[in-house]
Image 1 (spheres, helix red, strand yellow):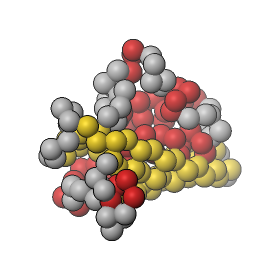
Image 2 (cartoon, rainbow, N blue to C red):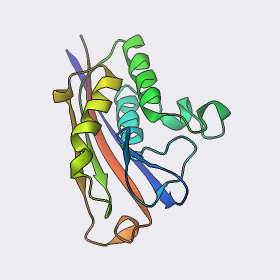
Image 3 (tube, rainbow, N blue to C red):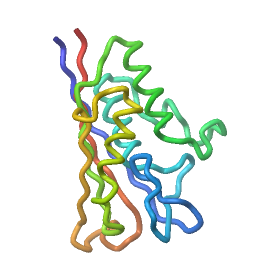
Image 4 (tube, rainbow, N blue to C red):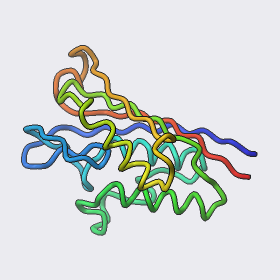
Length: 159
């Protein structure tokens, strides 16, 4: 087997008047994230990790923020498209691991649902998807409640 690993990173600032969508879950909070799509930083980081592993560019290449088709788009649907593109290029997903960096809100109650949503969009078993959350101890932009970041790594393979 031919294994490949990729890393993804995404960040969005908080804004008023939008839902906070993380891992496809509507997380109750007073603010959402600014972005062209639903601004789901977790799913965006995973997509970039998958695309990077396959050397197929990044989400900005495939889903540009100046394309009206992606205005308010559900990131889980975009993730489905990324996984289809991987399969078209002969790759399968081994696993994906994502860390969400947010001072608030507390995300533990939503992690299991995020994992299920992401696994479903990737058409893999939930055991192949890890989602974790951490704070930055009130340091930096996430610690000062200016936004949320996410890091992801993904392993793909070709038989």
